[in-house]
Amino acid sequence: MTFRAPMIAAAALAGLVLGLPAATPAPAAEKTGSLPVAGQPADSLPQASDIRVGGDEKQTRVVVDISAKIDLVPFTLADPYRVVIDLPQISFRLPPKAGEQGRGLVKAFRYGLIMQGGSRIVLDLKSPARIEKAFAIDAADGLPARLVLDLVPTDRASFLRTIAQENRGANRAAHAANAKAPAEPLAKAPADPRPLVVLDPGHGGIDNGTKAASGEMEKDLVLQFAQLLRSRLEKSGKYRIALTRSDDSFIPLADRVHYARSQGASLLVSIHCDAVPKGEGIAEGATVYTLSENASDAEAARLAEAENRADAIAGVDLTAEPDDVAGILVDLAQRETKAYSNQFARTLVGELKTTAKLHKHPMKSAGFKVLKAPDVPSVLVELGYMSTKDDLKQLTSAAWQGKTAGAVAQAIETFFAPRLAGTGPKGN
Image (cartoon, rainbow, N blue to C red; front, top):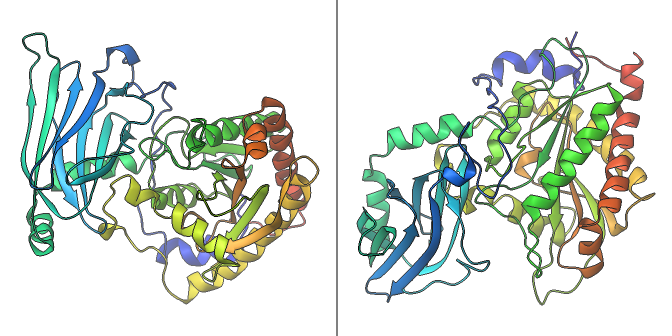
């Protein structure tokens, strides 16, 4: 008998809502600056040593210096205007602030791992542009191999028409097949009756999340914390634990939710760090969020909007995202799930206040996409503000991480205790 928190979801939603193929987890990969393909040493990956943007708004050229000639697959996305360059997996060895400023038609750019075996560069455009040329050059005359992309201006109608006409079905299907598989297999076989807790380290790969002025990145801190929390929970032997990512991989938001649902998760804890935009004041402390279409305050709405942009940041085309929540049965399940989510959120805040500094309003709600599983109790934890000096000092402290992971583990223990004792509802 597998434990499930919401009673309605296990039966009523099985056929009507979960008509999706189960996600098959891919094996975890070794952690490096850019993850190696299975069995391939990181040093053997092609290395990008520089990205240059030149020209003006009449013609802009992007050049990537790379240690070996590789293939590139460019395409465009709208709203916002972007050019995406898909590559085999490479190691980016670029200056720390590379991409923060562009030139010509390119406003800025991002780069990183998009899935196991694949890397991506995303160019944010100032206005609609057309890909005039895209090619690779072998190393020659003392110069490294290069990737070259030429952009010229176009109008919005032509930009959208190009997107509609692009035949990239095989390429996008390959990406979807790989992106549907989060980075970590379950610790135990599915028949294991213990509740499954899914830990969701936010961001990853090309999506860095927020970044401290001193260079620390949210994606690294939350992964480190999730791995520490996993170790704490596994020591109790009471739960199965899975991570949506166990390395520097990008996982689309919908796939994180789909993974938790398809594996029969009993709880999803999404882990993040916040930051206040420059010039908008100072905030500090941890906050626990639950799902609500009506944000509890303006700050919650701002954060949810920022977190929900993760897929757009990574250059994911959301127009094909499946809608797997519909109908009255889902509404009923969501009501029950919401009650469990709120219960866990209150328990978590109670435990965190013993070890961590809390935000002045530590419980909030907003429309986070990653919390929208109708049948899995879910919360999103903002551990602190990377834009605040004292919070950042704690977030990067091993002692603080250990104490706070212990508090979260205790909250999970308290949440499941009556159910594990047989007094709470069980699924089938």
